[in-house]
Length: 67
Image (cartoon, rainbow, N blue to C red):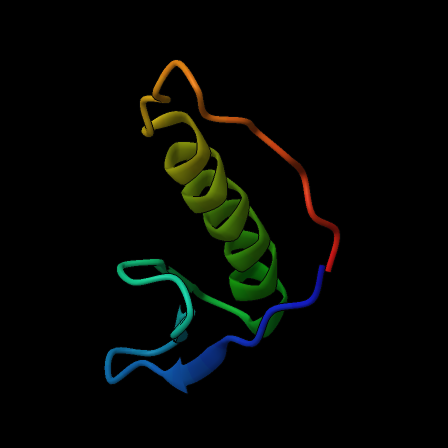
């Protein structure tokens, strides 16, 4: 899966990043390498939380879609 993120320079130094497609998915890092690592963790955590927070009705089905 590929997803777009926006990386901004932080006023106090370092960087902060957001993922527009995932509301509230933000992170920061002192270096570009660190913010990229943190972004991967933030996206994985956001998706895991979103997938586990839904209660299924008895007639619902779960499917996995690769994009």
